[in-house]
Structure formats: C-alpha cells, structure tokens
Length: 379
Ligand code: SOE
Image (cartoon, rainbow, N blue to C red; front, side):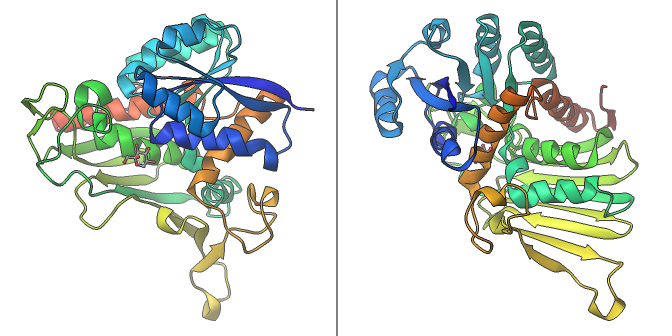
C-alpha cells in the first residue's frame, strides 16, 4: 500500500497544471512506494488559487508561501513560480526539512544555484528540477543508445528550441503571464527558458561542455511593463545561438529564439557518431530517427522508430504497442522517477546539484555574448 506524500504547490500557471496532472495520474500507471496527495495550493491571489485548487483537487489553499512551508502536514514543496522566487523559497523549504521539486531553470544564475544545491545537501532533503524532456520515451531512448556506445565516438551535438510568440512589439512585459519577458523576474530570456532544456538534455546525453562562444540579440528593445504601465527597456535575450566544445571532444551547435515565425515549440536535437546518428523532434515526440552505418549498404537509411513498444523506456506502463503517449506524460514519468528514488535511495536526476551544471553553462553564455569571447565552463 503506497504511503501518502503530501504536496504543497506554489504557483498555479501552466506548470502548476502540468505537475498537478502528473501527481494525479502517476499511481494509476506506476507501482510506487508513495502516493502524492494534493494537500495545499499556494499563490498570492486568493480567488485564483481557490479556483485552481478546486479544479485540480487540492484540499486547501494558502496565500503566503512561508505559511505553506511551516505546515506540518506538507512533505514536499513544488516551486512553480517565476525564476526570481526559486532561491528564497527553496532555501526556506530546505531549512524546514521539506523535499523540493523546483521548476526549471533552477535559479537566476549559477551562484544562486550553487547555494540552493548546498542548502538541500546540508538539509539532506530529496530534491529535483523539472527538466521534463528527459522523460519523453524517445529522448530517454536516445540517451540509452548513446550510453550503450551504439553511435561510437560522438562528433556532433546539435539542438534548437524555436518559438514565435513574442514577435509583436505591442506585447507587454512583466506581470502574470508575461514574466518570462521581464529580466528581473526571469533572469534571462530564451537562454534560461528554452536553451536550458537543450543544455540539460545535452549534458545528460553527451556529457559536460568545456567552453563556448555565444551571441544573443534583443530584437524589441522596449516594451510596456504590465505592472508599471510604462515603456521599459527589455533586458532579456530574445534569441541566442552558441557553439561549444564538449569534454568528449565533440562539437555542439545550439539555437533558440522566440522570433522564428511559424514555430511554436520546436525542440529538436541530433547526435552524430562514428557509427550511427539519432535525431528527435518535439512535434513528433513519440518517434526517434536512427541511422546506422553498419546496416547492409543497399538497405541503409534513416529508421523512424515509433517508440511505443513495451520494451521502450516507460512504455511498458502505458497502453499496448503502437499506441503513443504525449507531452503531459513526461511529467507523470518525472513524478514516478522522483518517488521511485525516494524508495530506492537513488535520487532521480536532475537534482539541484546536477541542474546547477546547466546554470554554469547559462552564465557562460551570457558572459560570452557580452564579451564576444570564448568562455570556459567553470568546473
Ligand atoms: C515557454 O513558452 C515554455 O513554456 C517554457 O517555459 C517551457 O519550459 C517549455 O517546455 C515550453 O515553452
């Protein structure tokens, strides 16, 4: 019989919904030692948090996150608030002995991220960062194929995350739905919001990055701020491209933007090795493309693998072969892995320490874009 794991959720936006859905569904499909109980939802707006709690089945609400953290009936704090609040909430939650599940990116910058990692380690509380794309079965399978050595020596890693929702100069910055455009709330633009996903996946699949050279651009220089009503300078990067050298000697090329007209959330990556290559595309997320040079010459070509068989990662828990799953399941898988880690004592990744590696790369990107120089990743 699974024991209760009482969740205190802070925030109620898009990610609050994605995580809540994960908590709801996980025990129906995975056999786990704990069952998440949606104990309390917390946000400053009383009516909005009540509506969120009613929709998702949270037992109670709070309007002050400090009160939520003080509550004895909460085991785990889920941080789904803007990036500039992660640090303070995480430190308080760790000091109170709560487990912490933090939305990505971990922090506003690497020094903050390091202090967060140290705080959870000192408090010995289980912790995890929601880099959900690792848990898309086809992405996990790509990781496994590279780890098994099937691609051979890796030469290239290439990733993009393209969107187009901020092209209009009339779009304001700041406030509820648009905090991602406000540098004081987000810390950075597409680098922390989108490239962070690409970097997390890349470090996981291809290992550490040695050095990089980046460029960023802010296409719309001023936007009205929703909270002040005034035109204010835009401090985020609207687009970012960087090239890098991985520790294993392979070369990396990364691009993200919110100005690629026609692309809504096109996350793609490709890894080229001596023997084989893999590529993946979020818009076709249940497929993994695989090319193996060892195939018989006349039949050699890209295989489009429908990652839905029971021996594919996570898929044995779902339907029958051939029936695919989607975006929301990556969050179900992440909850499952977190809970499994509580049971086995082998923590689910990325934990704060692991996600701090991504912060180091993100800081190096902004440094390099500013200086125009190559920057070594601090180790
Ligand atoms: C931004 O539009 C966003 O919602 C990111 O914040 C998410 O992390 C990404 O998965 C999809 O795009």
